[in-house]
Length: 281
Length: 256
Length: 87
Image (cartoon, rainbow over all chains, first blue to last red; front, side, top):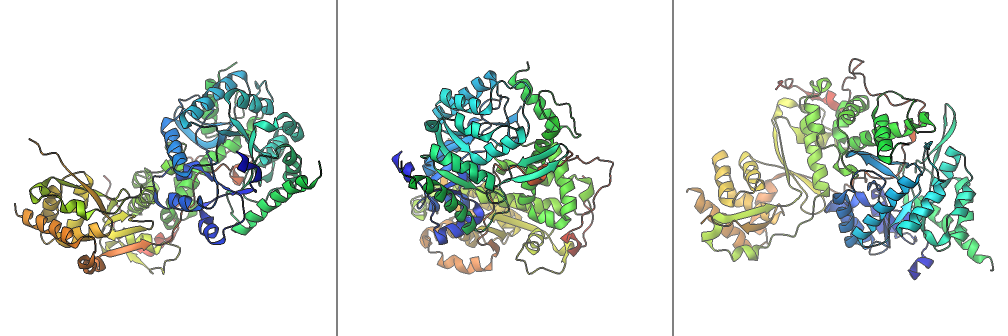
């Protein structure tokens, strides 16, 4: 998709900003929505999305498919996603390297998988079923996580990369999530960036997080409620040249700032990209 | 080594367990499982808070927090889309011991759920009067009119709509509402993009309720007139058509 | 059937009207309606973790025997009515 090479940084589109987006027509390259917020059959969410997608390429980012669950793949959920996809012709469709339900009970959260061969076989087959059903490639995003499993045999970056290779999906590399997990679990985030092949990455995310002091030290929470942290900008500056063709997006989900602040974050991401472009080869 | 299935069911029961169990098998740093344990409860409780803002305002944050927590414990989410969560909150409130002093509370919740339903319901084309004109009067008894997909009916012994309205952020604010002021029979509908609440007479309510159950126009008219002998069918039906409440019709196969 | 003529008249007038709505406007004006203009509800699904999920302890479910909060909000402004009859 050659147009992707020239896509400026994008922003997550949230309901609170619908009218501001229509009025201000911010200079961002694209917008991403959480798919499930548009699963309703009609009304304002769909109405606004229909209008905004006339002006901006749209990406659908799912949070509820529960790809890693050992329950049956949720056909009703997939069907709604496919219907939405047909309606808004997204540039990209993505989900998470996670599970969120078991025995039909949903936690509506992104829960981590153990990084084992068994879990990989499982999620690879589920991603392939999803791609067959949707008739297109999807991207899978790495998580922020707070626990690890004692019987994991693979590093997350190897698990993610191998899952993408075997299933044919792409990777949505969330730079903030790499940073958050690297601090929470004590690994080197640069090693993560090194291990992921550039050609597998179809999108990047940036978001704000929160540092918390807990009993046994510090924990970072993936809170999406503030500007991107300096450490994450630094990590992005390293990632940007390697994943030069992957469009980048600013996510912000609670304590939303005015639209201009979000656009300013996207502009900053864009400048980091262009600084790299300015360096003669 | 436990299977992925076993890990997930074990993790699930650890998340649901009320007390901090530090002994979660396979988790390297079990105390941190509290983040997940807390997050899903907060998420579901916040979902209820955003669905039921008027209930929340009526009872205050502390009470709402307690009662939403109780609801979450007894009613797991069954969908990966949070818009599907919380439909039964009204029924839960009607049995909730600590809310018995507020007998109208569950009706307010029912109205708020009808709002949520209407907000996400499908859009509809406007009524095609020319198609109706082509139907011969002998077939009128077989007409089955379809309401807008967003339409929902709510009844209450209490002035629920006034309570709802006086608890909106932009409300002028009635100083006080007397519960004995009379009940409400309401239609919640979204003819285009904005949601409307329409107060109905007894006959109008029965008319729409009958149509909603899929009965013929014939049956709906009879029911409405039986409930309210002076029901202004002509005007109300015209209003429903022009206002986008009735959006379509089909002919019921005659039983021959 | 008594309602038949009323029913036919109702349909006839809708057919005659087309959808101009002129004749029903007077009736519509009599209807008691509230319209919620411009309200856009925030999307419920997202992929953040709640900031307050990170506490040193688990959120405790309420102990049914513990202190029970009393409704303390705008319900103070609503007066009268009897306690709901228990089913």
